[in-house]
Length: 463
Image (tube, rainbow, N blue to C red; front, top):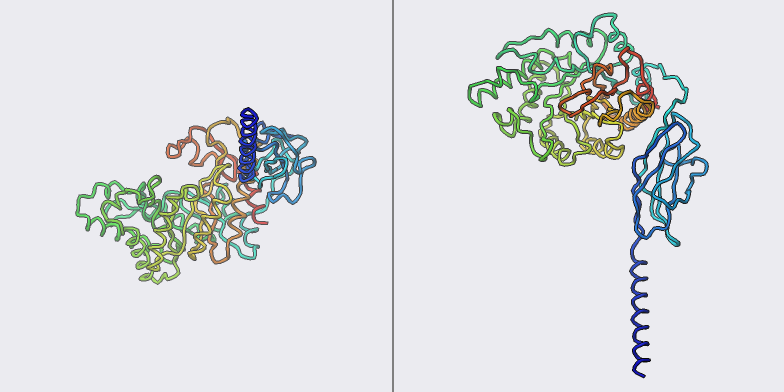
């Protein structure tokens, strides 16, 4: 009898434990998988990969040529896979594809993973579109300036740069020659030669001129670095410089980056520059006020004033700091727009990250200038030549960037500026600032002024 009782008790314990386990399993929702970057990309396929999901028995893989999965590649509409990867085959070379995955049990299917984009290698044999960028942009219902960073030495009549600029671009920014260091040679002494040439070129040819930049910690002239006067006297020198430059170009330069890169990369605080140290935490507002006062005094009441910075789409503490700077300037009605540098790679930032960043500026009523766009294809130095895969991935990233910008409300558009003309003259390769150890091909034209697939991608982004 005792043994029988113990057996019954044991059965009950096992039964209740099993019920409890079943209940707990039922209570845990099936997690959504995370899709990873593809491997082994070739002309006709690639290996799709994703992370393991607890309790899943299999995975459902979708592959499409459209990001919203309106259609599916044959055999890849919820294809059931029991591994954590699948070799996708039967694709077309030189073509953009997208994939996503869901986890599956006997009774449950998870939500969709993130969407991964991949471009097969090879060529689609479609020639590059030779249309001029500004011509197509000007035909938009809500056009915007298509810009290019330039050097004064490039602006010789009939040069390759000159021909492309006049045909393709409606705005120019000085790459370096309108910063404080090359212009200000001593207190109240200015070398206008290169900057004047750039401004005159734009004005003569009906091309908008964006001024870059009045205050930047990496372009402080030596005489100001060594300035031995009081902090108040240092501040007066900066005010005099801003006032004189804005006055000199009143009516000729339509917009200025007043302060460039004042937010720290790591702390979400102000960058510890000579301007912060000697002028105090309100120096940005002071600089904007001086620029506005100088423009108004010169009768240039339409001058647009921008704050300009980089890496805000992926660095959220920095993004928050930039928008706190913007809020302070807006409270005094001193700022018109925000410059997003966008020195991007073919992998980052994501579309969602860029849109989130831009939408914050839209919500604050700011004009948006994509001020320094280039797209690296070799950020980790894993290729020694410009491969077809990276060429097409770069094309898609330029297309994505332009589509995002073109979708902005009309009142928030200003210009989309490419940071340089030819790959071999870009600042990206071997950049010590970026720790970029190898070569790269980040722009719209090759070393021989020939348009690349990135140029076609820009045009496609305007559709």
